[in-house]
Length: 546
Image 1 (tube, one colour):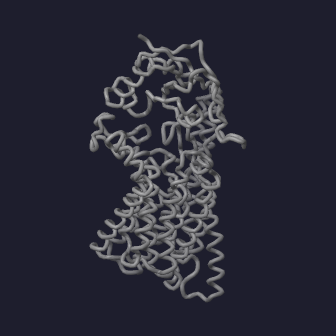
Image 2: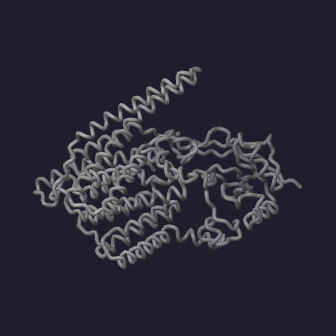
Image 3: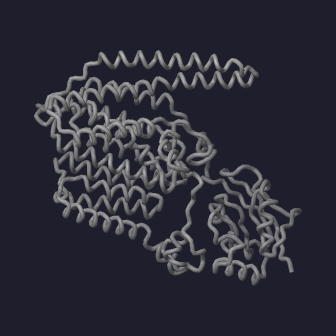
């Protein structure tokens, strides 16, 4: 699986290469063949750096070789981005009328990703919104949105059509159990399932949520499963706010070229000041936090005011130092001949920024769960490059920005711990105990742990019934057609019953099983061995209660 996941590296490499070529960094279309060759070599090297930092993210490393499949379906999403950027870069087109084939194929790729994993729908929305930034009147943009929507729907049917038909035939809903207020399946409650565990609460938390990737704690993203620190989204958030301010300011002010140029330089200095101060404040903040914890642990809380005073004094001195550094930086802009096609640069940059921003907003509003944001983590270094290119015209200064930001991202990154199994003959290493009459038995599963991978290792005649899960249809206290069928199946079954659970959860799960008139025999159990689980997974004998 890790080898397949590794294709994400080459996709972001290709995306970065064609994106940088469109931005004309540092080459231009009027270059000689020798300079173009040298420029392409430079772009290859820089693209490799971007792709390495993109893959070197906490979510990518956490999921590498795993079965969550976020870094599998991301191949289709990144492939769709690559298809459009390659067309723009190699053919120099950015008009909707010239990109219909690319729009259709990329839409199908995004649809396949959504069909394979429904959480990818946020990128479908991002894609549909992003295509509107390409050149064309409103009629052609509306037509392109419709074309992209149809293409995405076709991709969903290709990858998920059969399963949707199966769900409709079995549960009377093609997206069972989701959106049941619309499909009204009798197997589920008339409600739309949502998991709001990690969603931000309140307007203020929504605004500062991107900073939680840096100051991460167990109440965000994925609880204790995902405890990593990453500054890339915080940096993009700050850059994006500055960029939006600059665009809005230039749109609503009518200055001469000279005054507008001076305003841009002024805002560039302000953004540099904020970014450099933000970046170098990090080790200072970490040092203060360590001292604070040590003093509290040693019962020396009375010394904290001194620590705070010294810290704030250092913050002030740092701010003054950064101010004088930024004030004396030369920010002369490049000539127009160096900037390549301004229109092409703007369209391709706005496409990627719109896709990233809309997809992130939809992710934060709908999920806020770390694994689902993997594609954005991968392309985030490229987003930083695009934003700096649009805001900082001085090539040398921009290069220093990129170096500083990329180094900070790499140095401050903390990858969440993920236990990995050793190489072996079997991926799962499952050994099922020899139990009498298990061939014709019903095995009850309770709790919310993902244990379905064990099922293929049992005899084909054994039937599994899950009586508890994240979905309310697997809840004995809720009357649905699903529950009625479970109770009827248990009542009419003549063979033996077994119960699959962990020793640590037996008391909690036992109460769920008793709701179906079943009793767990504690004295008769069998150990199940698997490489993916800690010790304690067992199969208990169960008997009906008359």
